[in-house]
Amino acid sequence: MPGLALDTGSFRDPSGSVYDSGQNILRTVTERARKAYEAVRDAGVLRELIAAGSLVDSVEVQPENWPDELRHAAYVIEHSRIPYISYPYEWSFAQLKAAALLHLDMQIELLKRDVVLSDASAYNVQFVNSKPVFIDLLSLRPYREGEFWHGHRQFCEQFLNPLLLRALLGVPHNAWFRGSLEGVPTLHLAKMLPFRKRLSWNIVSQVLMQAGLERRALNAPEASIDKAKSSKSLSRTGYNGFLVQLRNWIAGLEPADTGKTVWGEYATTHTYTDKEADAKRIAIEEFAASAKPGRLIDLGCNTGDYSVAALDGGAGYVIGFDFDQTAVDIAFSRSQKQKLNFLPLWLDAANPSPSQGWRQSERRGFAERANADALIALAFEHHLAIGRNVPLHDVVDWLIGLAPVGIIEFVPKADSTVQKMLALREDIFPDYHEAAFEEAIGRRAVIVGKQVISESGRTLYRYDRTASR
Image 1: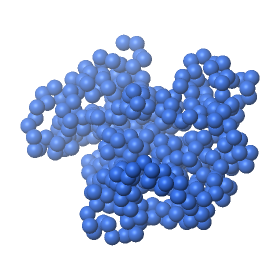
Image 2: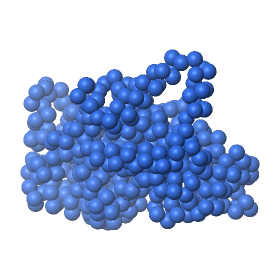
Image 3: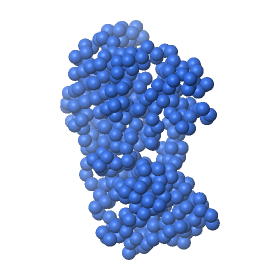
Image 4: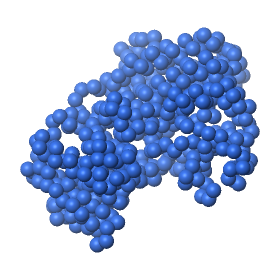
């Protein structure tokens, strides 16, 4: 099996590692983790979770089929490939909440089978379409009578606290989580909460008391810490009650900033006439039907209208990206309700997720993951070129680099949206015009189609990077 590559995000786990062969995703189980894995497997827990769709498909590979590099393992597991790897700092509030509820629901059900999760990393959850799926089966181990939830602090920092940041303070978690890969520290959140937000038992028990315990632990002598660890004990009933109470609280959380946003309202307030919107939708359907992309990226997906059009046309899977939190939440809800092959994610296109973590390789950046068969970027380029002062040719070059074929919409200066953007600033964009846009495409690809779709002159350009010039 040539080209076996270690997943650089799996190095922290002494129980096993993840490898990508280019065709298969393989996970090793070390001798250290053999007994725990066998106990959970033999109890039928893995099979039940996979059947329920909560755990990624996993099959033991027979020893005679193991790659030579993995002969040291106790077991080798083959997993289904996730269509697109995303991270918690790219999820909307609703997605992070769905991932948190999956984690807690699994814990509650596992406890009935004498199994627990050894940690509570948000990175152990991925999305397939709109469904959260747990991907780390080695986090499952047998329950030990009287044990406390060892992953509680990690759950708070990577799930609960980021949700509370938005639910209580109206602050999106994305930039903070991306800058601090382990999540939002409880000590930091506790300092931020105003008095009126502290007056609930949930906040007292899950934030303020936890922050107090952390402060005492930081200042306590080592002997006191060891004694505190050894004295921790929780009955099974108490453990379950703790999980259920936390689950019910999180299920009721909603963003504090639920008012209108510019792009969250765009689907109903855009300047297109119905006829123009229909023409645009048909163009995307026809493009998808012609290109037949297995994976299509929709930059500036908003609430997903044209992502759905691409799916209707024949795209196999659409990953949408948008900067507006409300728009991504709406698109995610739409994907859930309609059971679409559509994953919307949050993205600041002027500052995409970088490769970061240990040796800058633990979490792969947008550029490494965002490869697709096709691209649509509709009403998008002007937000970078005009809104963020990125040279137009750089914007076009970046877009075309994401996929070999695609459609990019050019929004001229005469359009009311661009006029609003320029209303309160000097027009320093002499090179922002259609001829420069076409020249920029021509540097990397061939223009194979051009369609004006609005009275203001908005134009869809279809490019092909592989066509002969």
